[in-house]
Amino acid sequence: MDNKSGTQRELCIRALTTEDLDQYNNLLRYAFQVTERGLAEVGWQDEEIKQSKFPVLERADVLGCFDGESLVSQIAVYPLDMNLYGQTCPIGFVTSVCTYPEYSGHGIMKKLMYQSLSHMRQRGQSLALLFPYSIPLYRKLGYEIISNKISYVVKDRQIPSKGKVPGYVRRVDWQSDDFMNLYLNFASVTHGCLYRNSLAWEEYWRWSEDDTVVAIYYSAAGTPSGFMVYLIKDDIMYIKEMIYLNHEAQEGLWEYIRAHDSMIDEVRGNSYYNELIAFEMEDGDIRETIRPYIMGRIVDVQDFFKHYTCDPEEPGISVRFEVQDRFLEWNNVDVTVRFEQGRCSIVNGMADYSVKLSIATLTTLLLGYKTAAQLYKMGRIEADMRAVVRLDNALQHEVPYISDYI
Image 1 (cartoon, rainbow, N blue to C red):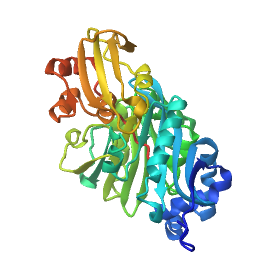
Image 2 (spheres, helix red, strand yellow; image 1 turned 135 degrees about the vertical axis):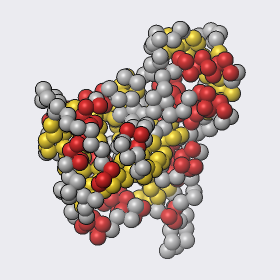
Image 3 (cartoon, rainbow, N blue to C red; image 1 turned 180 degrees about the horizontal axis):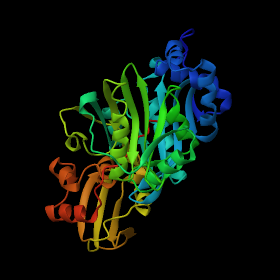
Image 4 (spheres, helix red, strand yellow; image 1 turned 30 degrees about the vertical axis):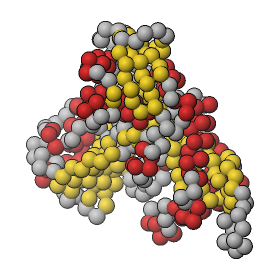
């Protein structure tokens, strides 16, 4: 709508280029209320923020809806790889989803999302992820919760002390090879973890303050085995992320935290593992909150199964999946999958068992966030109980570790 003349103008959707950088940045800042004061508090200037988005328009799939020459809505998809039970799966991370308020409620974002998912399918990205600002909205588009974020507060007197570990901790630069290689090693053995490319690392650090610290735990042999990214401010240690390859590294990092007890009153952190930390602490009377974090949806059912693995210990079975997808018509399929010796393959012929479910339910099931038995009790799967039990036996059950917010 042209507010001056009251006449209708045709809206068009096209890919954004670097020439659209100003409008792209202005829409982001308006939608997410990024102010000059907020930028200054974390050491950013407006021009720096704008230029930091330049690579996004060059290397990500960014679509915009235009009213004449004016950008009114946009969506971006970052190309990434994900560890899917030990297999590398190309995915698209959906971000920068925003629309000017006067254009909301007209189905524009729905059209942008459909086109973005179509592009993902063409590129072989069979899974889409996003951080939801509205879980109900994205559920209508076939997305479902697949991971959690656990936030915790530990008082200085509650910081665990479990004796000396054989290794040591060293602070390193953000660009340290040990740090980067350790994360890559962690991602290669952790289901759901994203292999961060340069775009993802830029987003990881975007709002970090200059005195954010990276500390690595090294084993006695000098092998990097865990790290933590943290900031100390106003007598509080804020832990952005802590990862470890073994229990020794976990204990070593907590010992390092304890070494700061004269400097801090409490520790506030986030964990993306699927276990609460209170049980492991001597004084487990801490505050922990758990909330849904990342949502996902399978973009192409048949292509997704090509990247999927199953429990290698279970006898082979075949399951017919009757999938319903209200948003992507190509996913309304009946597909029979053979689970055998850790591998999945699409086959023809009769199946041993049959299940009926939505694309959202299939996504959270195959990603490991919920079991078939849990979803069956919720009324999300139509099947007989034997099918549910055998399907759960065939599948692996590990909730994804996803710490990225892109």
